[in-house]
Length: 253
Image 1 (cartoon, rainbow, N blue to C red):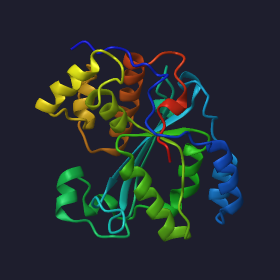
Image 2 (cartoon, rainbow, N blue to C red; image 1 turned 180 degrees about the vertical axis):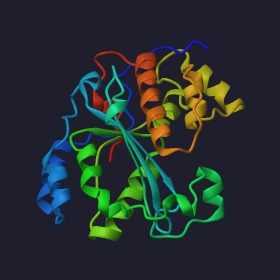
Image 3 (tube, rainbow, N blue to C red; image 1 turned 45 degrees about the horizontal axis):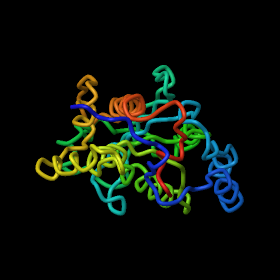
Image 4 (cartoon, rainbow, N blue to C red; image 1 turned 30 degrees about the vertical axis):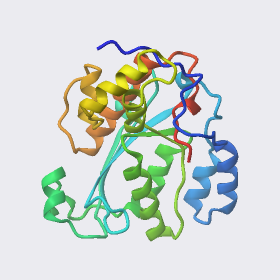
């Protein structure tokens, strides 16, 4: 299917821009935990930074369930990247001991069993290294409600304060690109009619398939983080230009 390039002058995932550098300065002044203070003090790129010049890190979690209030993170995968390269040698993967029990449904989903997490660290134990991997980078996820809400809830439980960071959501981006059409683009109304008749899947594997990216086994945190990084690179090359700013893609809050 022919997919026209997006007019990034009109494209925004949020209705308002967030001044993340200023927000980080304020958060550094309010934070209590020393690791969070250090994380916020390292700052983040300004909104007008070109996406091609933005340091990024793809992140994915496996969890004991889908409700961040009742379930826990059991695996984290991280890989730093930019629009030219994915830095696999710097990737990290942690198995964690959850504070809520594993349930059969989640075990069948991601394959992480009780024996696999025996003697694994608590998230608090890897917190300094995790934050160092995220510091100064824009986080890239596929469905940010999982990563942002679960990480915030995990921090609230352990250090009694949450965490906030800029994120690009490749799922939200794919939904905007394909489900809503393209504003004034003449193909927009056709695409909207087409996808009303046949609802388009924006799951990670299906989104990757549209860009002819290879199939990976799903539900492994590091593999999914790498898959998400590759997806954003493909979205960028297909729909955007070298003049695309990071604030065209990052979520509003």
